[in-house]
Length: 226
Image (cartoon, rainbow, N blue to C red; front, top):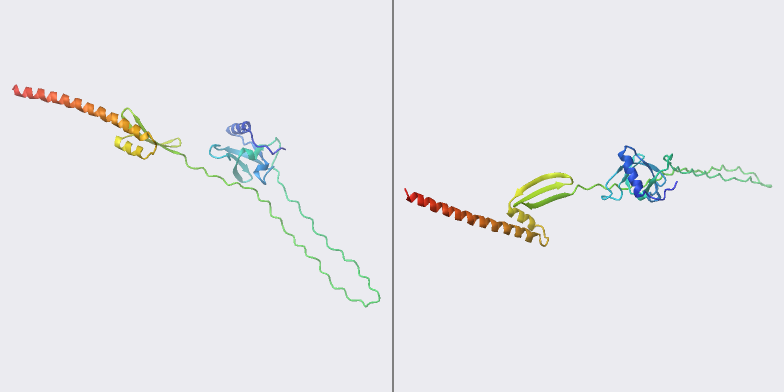
């Protein structure tokens, strides 16, 4: 089983289609996954690859951890989870004591020789490499100031959820908002729009004043005719 190569783009797409069909494809960990290389897990989810390179969520035992495509490879059919057990260390042999030959010497009682104590220590199980799960940040917030048909509107949206529908604001408030944006040309464009609206409003006011003066003159003539 070759676990040296990671998932290709086509294999990631195949896994995405399998998840959409309700299946959980098996994968094998490559050498870049660390101490769990050669082990087999199940893909349960694909997150957004633009948020993190580790977007392939794999269930391994009781853990559900994200990995990058380079850490995984498609498991061959018939492959099950393989657990590597540590080999037991052989027990040391007791030393053999040769018999003592005594020639014309009084026999001395042999001292009792204690057998060497062999302490058996259990090897701690190999720790699996656990990758820290990167928490996803909150969705982006967008506040939009727009101008159309002589009205300024403000809207707010977080991700795909609309927080505030477009509502009308006064030109002075729009100018204050734009003043907070230190971008060359933006404030000049807003001031130009406001200047155009101001000129049109002044022309309309002059026209209305002239019409009102004519109406008042006509009314004065009618009053004198009584």
